Image (cartoon, rainbow, N blue to C red; front, top):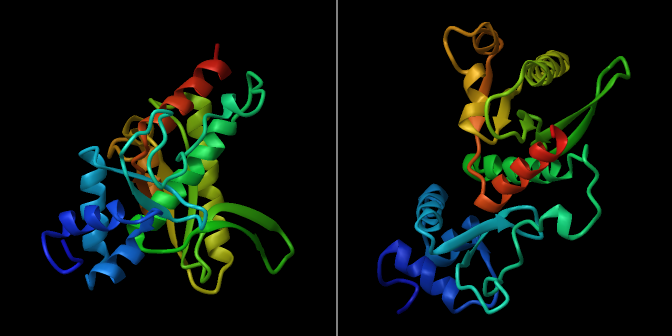
Length: 235
């Protein structure tokens, strides 16, 4: 099969099957001559949901695609593991949030992939010299993101943490020459629900401040790591 025959799904799988490395959506779009990158993104996400592809964060910080062909040791051909469970590499203390920090990186990369932007953590210094760090921003600071890796409904104190992140976004946006798009990124629908429900004052406040709620799709292993960290932290 050539790069110009077959369906887009078949052509993506064929390209990855004959390659010695994973490819990101932009590379696949260019290789296959598909003008709309979002088309490749949608097809790859569907293939991943069907279990034919693995999507994970590559060395350049972008989501890449690899065939899901496990070897005897569990690896995927041409791919590095998406996230190594932290407990396999370092000693984890009961209060450690290393898994959540790793998951937040995956969430930011997923959001960047969805929006077609390059996002990364940034430290912003205001005119008064105050400094603030955000989990994700593009080079032009047209988008600012705070991420919260949590599974399940939030506790009261955790809701306050999210609202503090929202306040930080709203405040730093007010100091910039052009107001950026603001997003709170969640890893779970249940965690995001209190900030989306119409009867919630928190949801109403976020809407009034033009702060969007986005829920990232995470690999099952990443979800399992977050849940394990939550059980360890609250036991």
